Length: 187
Image 1: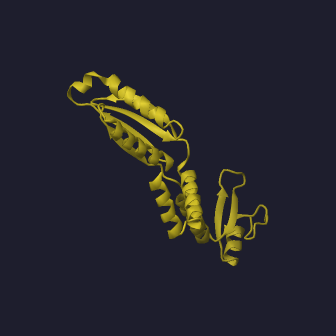
Image 2: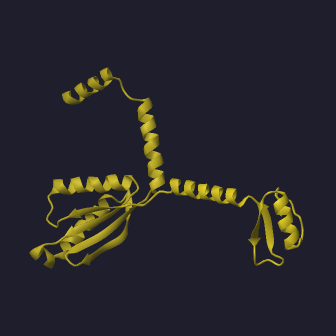
Image 3: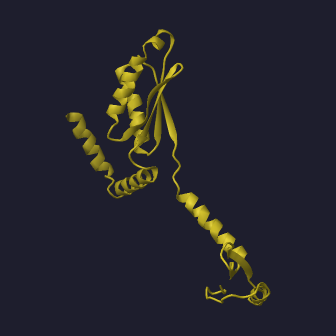
Protein backbone atom coordinates (compact mmCIF):
# COMPACT_ATOMS: atom_id res chain seq x y z
CA UNK A 1 0.00 0.00 0.00
CA UNK A 2 1.20 3.47 -0.82
CA UNK A 3 1.54 6.50 1.46
CA UNK A 4 -2.03 7.68 0.70
CA UNK A 5 -3.62 4.24 1.14
CA UNK A 6 -3.65 3.39 -2.58
CA UNK A 7 -2.86 -0.12 -3.81
CA UNK A 8 0.60 -0.37 -5.37
CA UNK A 9 0.44 -4.08 -6.14
CA UNK A 10 3.08 -6.77 -5.79
CA UNK A 11 6.50 -5.11 -5.65
CA UNK A 12 9.92 -6.52 -4.77
CA UNK A 13 11.37 -5.61 -1.38
CA UNK A 14 14.14 -3.58 -3.02
CA UNK A 15 11.63 -1.48 -4.99
CA UNK A 16 9.40 -1.03 -1.93
CA UNK A 17 12.33 0.25 0.13
CA UNK A 18 13.25 2.64 -2.68
CA UNK A 19 9.63 3.97 -2.74
CA UNK A 20 9.76 4.45 1.04
CA UNK A 21 13.03 6.40 0.85
CA UNK A 22 11.71 8.63 -1.94
CA UNK A 23 8.57 9.44 0.07
CA UNK A 24 10.65 9.85 3.28
CA UNK A 25 8.49 7.22 5.02
CA UNK A 26 8.98 3.82 6.65
CA UNK A 27 8.12 0.45 5.12
CA UNK A 28 5.97 -1.34 7.72
CA UNK A 29 4.89 -4.97 7.43
CA UNK A 30 1.13 -5.08 8.16
CA UNK A 31 0.28 -8.75 7.53
CA UNK A 32 3.29 -11.05 7.71
CA UNK A 33 1.33 -14.30 7.31
CA UNK A 34 -0.35 -13.28 4.05
CA UNK A 35 1.11 -14.53 0.77
CA UNK A 36 2.69 -12.28 -0.43
CA UNK A 37 3.27 -10.30 2.82
CA UNK A 38 1.38 -6.99 2.95
CA UNK A 39 3.44 -3.86 3.66
CA UNK A 40 2.48 -0.21 4.00
CA UNK A 41 4.35 3.06 3.57
CA UNK A 42 3.82 5.24 6.66
CA UNK A 43 5.54 7.42 9.21
CA UNK A 44 6.05 4.79 11.91
CA UNK A 45 6.96 7.27 14.68
CA UNK A 46 3.75 9.22 14.08
CA UNK A 47 1.75 5.97 14.01
CA UNK A 48 3.22 4.84 17.37
CA UNK A 49 2.52 8.28 18.92
CA UNK A 50 -1.11 8.32 17.74
CA UNK A 51 -1.74 4.77 18.99
CA UNK A 52 -0.23 5.69 22.39
CA UNK A 53 -2.52 8.75 22.58
CA UNK A 54 -5.58 6.60 21.76
CA UNK A 55 -4.59 4.12 24.47
CA UNK A 56 -4.13 6.92 27.00
CA UNK A 57 -7.53 8.39 26.13
CA UNK A 58 -9.16 4.98 26.50
CA UNK A 59 -7.59 4.54 29.95
CA UNK A 60 -8.70 8.03 30.96
CA UNK A 61 -12.34 7.24 30.21
CA UNK A 62 -12.15 3.86 31.91
CA UNK A 63 -13.86 3.55 35.27
CA UNK A 64 -11.98 1.66 37.97
CA UNK A 65 -14.08 -0.54 40.21
CA UNK A 66 -13.28 0.01 43.85
CA UNK A 67 -14.27 -2.36 46.62
CA UNK A 68 -15.31 -0.53 49.77
CA UNK A 69 -15.47 -2.45 53.04
CA UNK A 70 -17.91 -2.13 55.90
CA UNK A 71 -17.30 -4.01 59.16
CA UNK A 72 -20.13 -5.00 61.48
CA UNK A 73 -20.59 -7.01 64.68
CA UNK A 74 -23.44 -9.51 65.19
CA UNK A 75 -24.80 -7.58 68.20
CA UNK A 76 -25.16 -4.20 66.48
CA UNK A 77 -27.57 -1.54 67.77
CA UNK A 78 -30.40 -0.45 65.43
CA UNK A 79 -29.05 3.09 65.01
CA UNK A 80 -25.54 1.84 64.27
CA UNK A 81 -26.98 -0.58 61.73
CA UNK A 82 -28.85 2.27 59.98
CA UNK A 83 -25.63 4.33 59.87
CA UNK A 84 -23.66 1.46 58.34
CA UNK A 85 -26.51 0.77 55.91
CA UNK A 86 -26.37 4.45 54.89
CA UNK A 87 -22.67 4.03 54.06
CA UNK A 88 -23.43 0.95 51.96
CA UNK A 89 -26.19 2.85 50.12
CA UNK A 90 -23.81 5.75 49.42
CA UNK A 91 -21.12 3.40 48.08
CA UNK A 92 -23.60 1.56 45.84
CA UNK A 93 -25.00 4.83 44.48
CA UNK A 94 -21.45 5.85 43.58
CA UNK A 95 -21.09 2.60 41.61
CA UNK A 96 -18.63 0.88 43.98
CA UNK A 97 -18.75 -2.71 45.20
CA UNK A 98 -19.16 -3.21 48.94
CA UNK A 99 -17.54 -5.98 50.97
CA UNK A 100 -19.53 -6.45 54.18
CA UNK A 101 -17.59 -8.18 56.95
CA UNK A 102 -19.09 -9.39 60.20
CA UNK A 103 -16.49 -9.94 62.91
CA UNK A 104 -17.20 -12.59 65.52
CA UNK A 105 -15.52 -12.58 68.93
CA UNK A 106 -15.49 -15.17 71.69
CA UNK A 107 -18.82 -16.97 72.10
CA UNK A 108 -20.28 -15.18 69.07
CA UNK A 109 -18.31 -17.65 66.93
CA UNK A 110 -20.65 -20.45 68.00
CA UNK A 111 -23.66 -18.50 66.58
CA UNK A 112 -22.86 -17.80 62.90
CA UNK A 113 -26.59 -17.74 62.07
CA UNK A 114 -26.80 -14.31 63.75
CA UNK A 115 -24.29 -12.93 61.28
CA UNK A 116 -25.96 -14.67 58.37
CA UNK A 117 -29.34 -13.13 59.28
CA UNK A 118 -27.74 -9.69 59.61
CA UNK A 119 -26.16 -9.98 56.16
CA UNK A 120 -29.47 -11.17 54.65
CA UNK A 121 -31.26 -8.19 56.24
CA UNK A 122 -28.68 -5.78 54.81
CA UNK A 123 -28.94 -7.38 51.35
CA UNK A 124 -32.76 -7.06 51.44
CA UNK A 125 -32.52 -3.40 52.57
CA UNK A 126 -30.26 -2.37 49.66
CA UNK A 127 -31.84 -4.65 47.05
CA UNK A 128 -32.97 -1.77 44.80
CA UNK A 129 -29.40 -0.38 44.57
CA UNK A 130 -27.32 -3.55 44.38
CA UNK A 131 -27.27 -7.31 44.17
CA UNK A 132 -25.45 -9.97 46.16
CA UNK A 133 -22.39 -10.80 44.12
CA UNK A 134 -20.85 -13.23 46.60
CA UNK A 135 -23.12 -14.85 49.19
CA UNK A 136 -22.27 -14.89 52.89
CA UNK A 137 -19.52 -17.33 53.79
CA UNK A 138 -17.61 -17.96 56.99
CA UNK A 139 -13.88 -17.19 56.82
CA UNK A 140 -12.33 -17.95 60.20
CA UNK A 141 -13.64 -15.40 62.68
CA UNK A 142 -15.27 -13.32 59.93
CA UNK A 143 -18.28 -13.76 57.68
CA UNK A 144 -18.00 -12.01 54.33
CA UNK A 145 -20.50 -10.99 51.64
CA UNK A 146 -19.92 -8.83 48.54
CA UNK A 147 -22.66 -6.57 47.15
CA UNK A 148 -22.29 -5.19 43.63
CA UNK A 149 -24.11 -2.11 42.28
CA UNK A 150 -26.78 -2.33 39.58
CA UNK A 151 -25.28 0.79 37.94
CA UNK A 152 -21.81 0.93 36.48
CA UNK A 153 -19.33 3.47 37.85
CA UNK A 154 -19.45 5.56 34.65
CA UNK A 155 -23.26 5.76 34.77
CA UNK A 156 -23.16 6.82 38.42
CA UNK A 157 -20.60 9.55 37.63
CA UNK A 158 -22.68 10.87 34.72
CA UNK A 159 -25.83 10.87 36.86
CA UNK A 160 -24.04 12.69 39.68
CA UNK A 161 -22.69 15.32 37.26
CA UNK A 162 -26.15 15.86 35.78
CA UNK A 163 -27.67 16.26 39.25
CA UNK A 164 -24.94 18.72 40.21
CA UNK A 165 -25.51 20.77 37.05
CA UNK A 166 -29.24 20.80 37.70
CA UNK A 167 -28.76 21.95 41.29
CA UNK A 168 -26.37 24.68 40.15
CA UNK A 169 -29.08 26.15 37.89
CA UNK A 170 -31.91 25.88 40.41
CA UNK A 171 -30.16 26.91 43.61
CA UNK A 172 -32.58 28.88 45.85
CA UNK A 173 -31.63 32.35 47.00
CA UNK A 174 -30.76 33.08 50.65
CA UNK A 175 -34.23 34.53 51.33
CA UNK A 176 -36.03 31.48 49.92
CA UNK A 177 -33.85 29.02 51.84
CA UNK A 178 -34.40 30.83 55.17
CA UNK A 179 -38.15 30.84 54.53
CA UNK A 180 -38.05 27.11 53.86
CA UNK A 181 -36.19 26.49 57.13
CA UNK A 182 -38.76 28.47 59.06
CA UNK A 183 -41.66 26.49 57.62
CA UNK A 184 -39.93 23.22 58.47
CA UNK A 185 -39.42 24.31 62.07
CA UNK A 186 -43.11 25.26 62.44
CA UNK A 187 -44.29 21.84 61.27
